[in-house]
Length: 384
Ligand code: OGA
Ligand code: NI
Image (cartoon, rainbow, N blue to C red; front, side, top):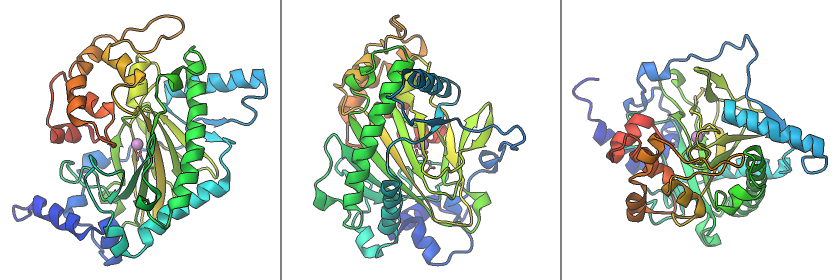
């Protein structure tokens, strides 16, 4: 990088436009600004060749509560996929196609509305706001910016007042969240059973109390091979349900290779988050994933993060006391590095709980046993 390049000023100038990546595309950029250029080795496309037809497991929920045999088979698939992939796709999950389509359309409408209206939502004040829009939550900390704008909304346990939500997608956000919350509860029931726990256990300890929606808009990119939509990261919640459109780009790291999560009409992608890996004593896996961009688009996705309401939730307590959940009748004390990782959790959370904070942030901050600065944390793990 030439010495004339003043990264900080460029980031600031970009942020101050408040129109995000879409603003650049609308202005007709033919080359992506340097702040978006990723180091080549991180982009390295060791994608799966497709020869062995390996793909993320698809689980059909049709009849899950109607037939005991089928129920047992589904639980087994959920267990196997969550242990080996950390990812699966769900079909026949009960959320009507109409609701999914409306949600994708709602995100499109939000991003494609008059930019003056959109600018009013532009903010980085995660501590105070439940609804906000920006480009790259970690713009000033990450080594390279991602080709993505995001609208974020905390939908549970305390959703914002209706007037606070964007007029173009208010009803859609409410309807979609209601349905996702219900499906999330079903998935937590299946996961509880998969771990040999009481069907209600993960719900009862509060893993599904909180719901944060991150609505991602990845504009078409003139130089897709130089940047990323989302850098490689693992999710820091308990569980994520992701709705994506049909463009594609999401990849999951499996056996050291990037495997496409192929868009399937009507399907929802489910992945295990860091906190579920932690409380299950590493039985379920929180796996790295990323999103590539293309010169077609925009691509739209909605990531629904299930997380605790706050640090007094039972599920967070199990971490603080290093207990985790009791698996197959045996208490599973969190061992070794877990204890180290959580030793600083409590004071950190007390000082910084916000609608957007989840315990993972603290976990990742202390994962080397020492509190790191936020920028060091983001640089070393590229957390979403
Ligand atoms: C995320 C994420 C992937 C996608 O928001 O955490 O992984 O396809 N998104 O948008
Ligand atoms: Ni993610």
